[in-house]
Structure formats: structure tokens, C-alpha cells
Image (cartoon, rainbow, N blue to C red; front, side, top):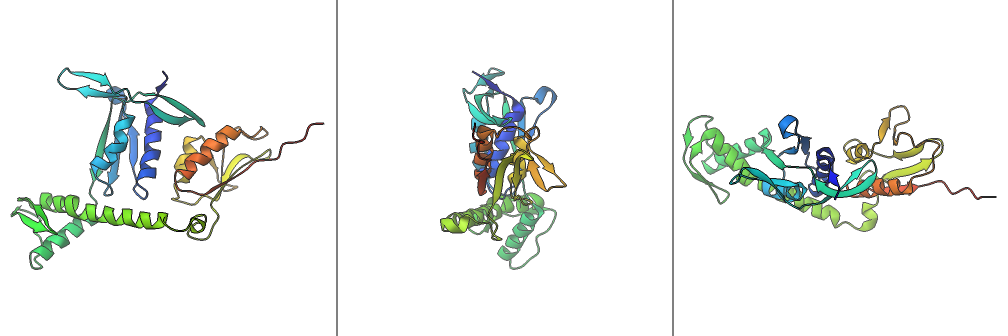
Length: 268
């Protein structure tokens, strides 16, 4: 059984979270020192912790048994992309910590809901607040900052995430011909190989999700020519297996990809 390095698991987890929760920015970091086999995941607003942990749990290779003070194997296996190749093995990950932050905007929305429930009264910023009902949800007695946080966490964020999922479902339900082109009418990305330039990707846009995928496959950005390229691929035959893996991962990000390879030169 092969073992998958923690950094490669972290890269795969980052891609899976981006695919599962479009529009949510996740920060996925491998630990250092005694925590080198641990991964931390941070994000703001978006999905609840339980939803995210549905995706982190299968990436752990071990879990801590507090009763016996030792780590135990989970028997999980993962498939990751390492240097353009799919590799399956046991993840060298002892644990994954998740941290969900609440944005200032969500806290402001929570304060507005509190005000509506109290006849327009501005919520105090200090002191203990009585229990109240916000949009049918019982908010416990708590200090003012903690109560605003609870309203944001239990009412505002679930409502916003439900709306985001509904919008995503509507987008996914568009006719296939409408999804083949980008919102601005572009035809998506082109993954191609030529002797002169090697393996390149053109047509990417800032924030479209392609950059992280391409970096995982070793691509670099050519500032002068404005495209992504695979170092060492010039004057080489096209690596069709590598290109297929890149295209598959880009499509997993809901990106349209057209592949183009040079025709084989006929032999004499």
C-alpha cells in the first residue's frame, strides 16, 4: 500500500472543497513541527462545519483515541494527483481541524434582525441580553457580542447558504448549450500541446478556479505570452495521459476545456 504525503492530501482536499462548495474560499494548510501530519481548514461564512467535515473525514489516515492516548488507523484511502499522475494510497494525516469564521457583514445582518425583533431598537454592544426569537429560532440569553454571533451563525448564514445553493442549482439546470460558453460568451479554456510552446492552457480568467488546479499539476504562468505552461514540455511529445488528468481536474471545477494535440507525423 502506497502512502500519500500530507501536503498532497491537503492539495487534493482543497480541490474537493472548492468543487463541493463553489464560491467559498477555503484556506487549507499542512501543519509544521509536531503537527506536520495535521491539516487545518479555514473559511468564512458559507457551509456549516458538519457539511465541510463530510469531505474532510475521508481524508484522514488516523484519528486520536483519547481513552488510550494513541492514534488509530482509519483504513481510509485517497486518490490524489502528484506531478500529473493519479496515485491511490493511505493518507499520512493524523487529523484535520476545521475553523469557520463569521464575517462582519453577517454580524451586521444579525444586528439588523435583532433590531427588527425589538421594535427597531439598536442592539447594545455590551452587557447581557435576554433570550429572544429571531425568524422562529430561539436565541439563548448571552452577552451582546456572543448573541449577535449566534444569530449570525444560526440564522443569517444558513439562510444565505440556502440561497447560494438554490442559485447554483438554477445555474446547473440551464440548457447544456448555455453552459458550454462562459457568462461573457467565451468558449472556455484550451489545453493544447505544440512543439514550440509545449503543453499550455489559454483562456483562463482571474478567479475562475483554474489557477489552483494548474499549479497542482506543475504549470507556471508565462507573463509575456499570457498563458499557463508545463515546464519541460517543449520539444517533447504530447503526454496524453497528463493532459487528460489536467482536463479532468479543470472540468471538475465546472470549467469548459477543449484539448488540442498535434497530429502524428506519418512515418516513411
